[in-house]
Each structure stands twice: as C-alpha cells, then as structure tokens.
Image (cartoon, rainbow, N blue to C red; front, top):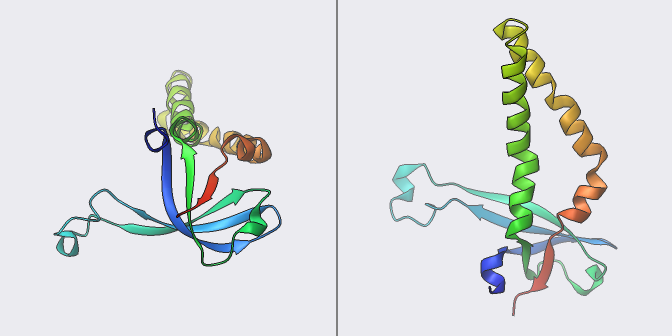
Length: 141
C-alpha cells in the first residue's frame, strides 16, 4: 500500500512558527467544489482551517512556505470515532435506557447531559489525544 492511499494529505501554507509547533492553513473543499455548476448550486463550500503540527524541527520552516500535512487514514477514522460516533452511541443508548424510567423530556435532557462529562474527559486527556493524533509535515517539492 502506498503512502497516498494510506494517508489523508492536504497542502497548505505555513502561518505561524513556534519552538515546538507549526500552524498550517489549509483550504478544505467539499467534493462538489470543483463542479462547473458550483456558482449557481450553493451546495459546494470551501472553508479555511488551521492545523497545528507539533514538530521538533519547526525552525526549518518559514512563514508563507507551502507544505503538505498528513495523518494516517486509520488515525483519521479513530478521531472520527471519538469525536462523533462514540458520543452519538452514548446519547442513543442512554436515551433508550432513560426512557424506561422517566418521560421523554427528562430522558432527552439526561442523555444530552452525559455529553458534558464525556467531552470534559476528552479535554482533560488532550495531551494524550494530541500525541495519539499527530499530523506529519513535509515540504512540497
């Protein structure tokens, strides 16, 4: 399996450099942003995002330089799991359980309240998550 098929890659421009990280600005495009009917459709969108890449070689990059940032597809799917799928499952399963004991309104509120400790736990463990889901950076030749 080659690098391109096993990694999610985006090209971007270096915005900011610090001792241990580089901020890269990328343009995220929807699949239909290149369509010839985009100007009349209003479905396609482009959004500028900033990615912080932690690296010990940040001093080798310069502001305005074009670079490529990447993350493995497996790590990308794992991040989607922790950010979207697992919280959905927590809400859905807890809603089914709470419905057995209380009204729909309270079951919904209690289920949504479970997201507070979930995301608080993610926030407390952000250093672990940051090291687990780190981007790689390289110059575009």
